[in-house]
Image (cartoon, rainbow, N blue to C red; front, side, top):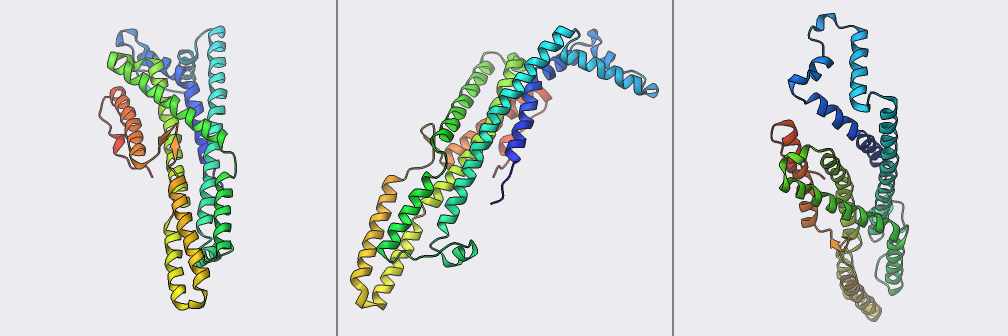
Length: 310
């Protein structure tokens, strides 16, 4: 599985947007004022035939004044605030990118582990292949499985994911209460910022749900044990002189399957099982909230919750 930095770079882009939200909102408030303020007319000249480089520089300076302030003190405060937002959000998204990379490594280990009992896949992945027809092999298979599941940072990554999930739920609850209280408050800066934070963190949460479910599915693949039990029954018929040894291995396989069923649990985030229903509900809630806000801001209906995210 090739290493990818897509989520890291995506987190940096989201950090830049989050740091500029106050300035963008300030600029949009000025541009969206009544025509009596003549803000729009002062930004864009009426006659575009005489537009030159000086006109563009004048428009740019006016945009900067509206977004970052006119005085030196005001610009300093705005830039320092934007820089702090950029640094803090970049650190958060860096931690999320590290957690996403850790989950990708866990998924890679789970995929390679599932190749051990298949001769074709083991040969393709350049891994040793062994059958689960002996007690020694079954013991080794269980030991490798336990080792790979504990490999890498566990508690720190799970704490990061759980904290982000709780923060996202709190932000969505806050935005929902604000919308119920007053629809006009949707255009306020803190509501827009809270919604964008929820959408940004929701992207990573959906990614963690997908990877965690795939990892559990690989380790909880009981079809391997069932297939090996069928092979053992066939070997008992073909090799009656090894019946006792094969029966012992078959009983151990049954106990291993029962143990995996008993001990394994679905992938959880903050105590909630990340089953397909939770994944679908989270995706629909996030995209529906975003589409509702964009519909109010843009003036036409958007249905982002119908987009398929793999």
